[in-house]
Figure 1: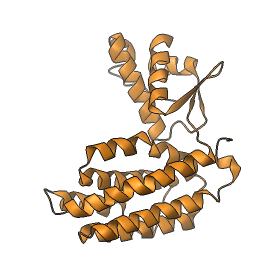
Figure 2: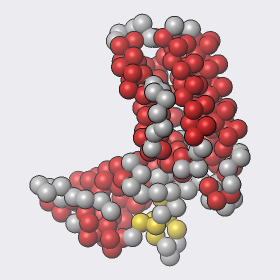
Figure 3: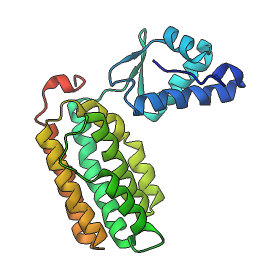
Figure 4: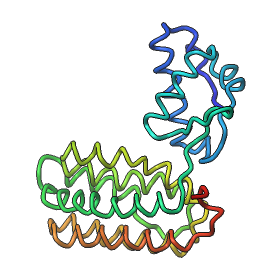
Amino acid sequence: MLSTDSTATAADQPRGMTVDFVVEKLRQGIMEGRFVPGQRLIARDLTDDIGISRGPLREAFRRLAAEGLVDLIPNRGATIRRLSRKQIRDLFRIRETLEGLAARLAAERIDEADHRRLFTEVWEQVRPTGRELPWRVFIERNRLYHRTIVAIGGNDQLMDLIQQLQLPLVMLQIGQAMPMENAEFSHQDHIHVAEAILAGDPDRAEAAMRTHLRRSHDWIVTLPDSAFRPD
């Protein structure tokens, strides 16, 4: 479950701040994989762990549901959102278009401000080394790489649209089913995208990103039904 800070808990804060505190705690737990898609959130355990009453927790659940991170199910409470095969396929088709544009913008702006330095530093952290990575490490590095490309592109509306897709949650759901050969394909695709961005070639960057995400989409359709919520 979640651990609380020794110096401050939600109970130490006014109600409005308490709800914000709980939302952030749960959101962080979801994004870091401490909760998994389809897992039921047990109110009694969470109130004990975080040190809050049921009221702020219910409000936190409602906010997370509005963000698309949890589903509120009558008579069952809150569960971490788990998507169907069709929902994930649809998201990746959208992602291909949005992140293709993000890669184009990043290549166009790579020599503005300190973008080249920033991208190079991130690329040195996430570039493939030939070693097999735990899947959560792979997903976190993948997330950092894609977020950096979107940030360098400088289009705030595009960033908001991509964030609404809740892609880290999607990757947590399908990540455990990813064979290592697919991770290697992803690494090679990342190299092609990075080379195009660093070369300042918008056409090649967009094409490489689209190819990368189309490959991911094609892999997803081969997963067994157990990887998805029933349609």
